[in-house]
Amino acid sequence: NDPGTPTTTSATQDFCLKDAPTVADIAVTPATAVWYSSATSTTPLLATDALADGNYYATIIDAVIGCESATRLVVAVNVNDPGTPTTTSATQDFCLEDAPTVADIAVSPATTVWYSSATSTTPLLATDALADGNYYATIIDAVTGCESATRLVVAVNVNDPGTPTTTSATQDFCLEDAPTV
Image (cartoon, rainbow, N blue to C red; front, side, top):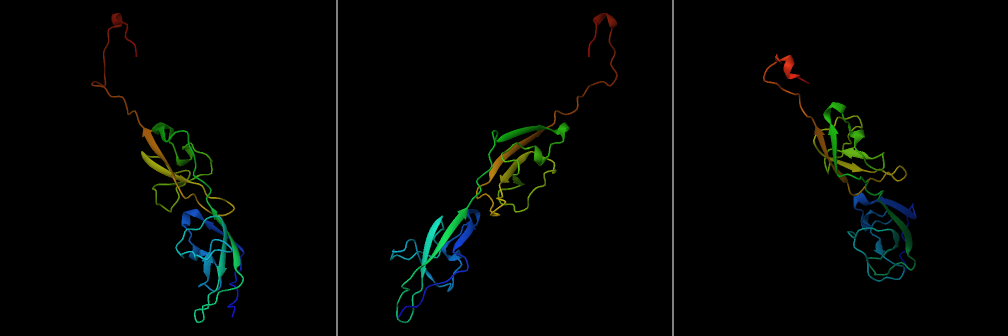
């Protein structure tokens, strides 16, 4: 007895590497389908096995009589990662008097999304003022919606040379000494 072939509404399924997709994430009916890495493999994949680009093959095994599908369903999997932004300087210095903002951090591509920590899910605004510390950048792919699995770290230093000081607000000089500023 052939228990039939599993079905899916999408023969090609896209995942984001950042989400750490596994075999269990492939959408198929029934959800109890058994997955293989090839059309002829006899070693089932584990539900927790990480997905990679390629084809996955599903069957149904009848739990009562032990028969397996004669035909395997093929699902093409794409695991997308837009990559990590790049910079020519992992430490960047700015002057406080220039009122630097997040948009001033030099990276490629310019459409980078910035965060205040390695795990934050709230993006910074391009107009947010910079302060000393680390900033974390990702890329979000406009087509897939996937975000970089690895964040670029840029150390920012906002320098303020301070205000000059004097020991006397009023100072007297002799013209014969040719004083200069």
